[in-house]
Length: 94
Image 1 (tube, rainbow, N blue to C red):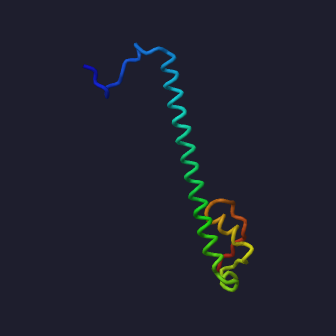
Image 2 (cartoon, rainbow, N blue to C red):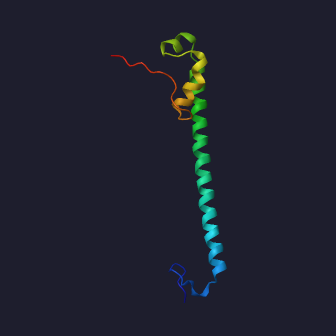
Image 3 (cartoon, one colour):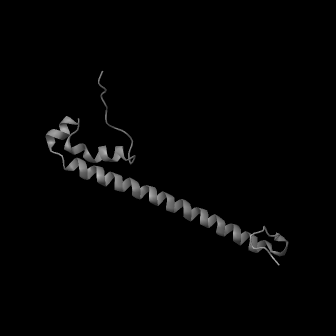
C-alpha cells in the first residue's frame, strides 16, 4: 500500500509532468507574492486615510502648534505611513 505522505519516486513521472508541476509551484509563489504586496499596499492606504482624517479634524491653531500647516496634512500622512520619503525638516529641541 502506498503512503500518500511519503516522498514519491519520480521514476514513473514523465518530464512534462514535472515541468508542469514546477510551473504551477512558480505560479503559486508569484500569486502569493502579489497578494502580500496588495495587502501591504492596502494597509498603507488605510493608515494614510486614518491619519489624514485625524489631522483634518484639527483646527488651524492646533496644527500650527504641531508644527504644520493644513496644506501639509497629506504629505505628513504619507510620510507617517511610509507612503513617501520624509521631506519635512524636523527641528529638535535642545
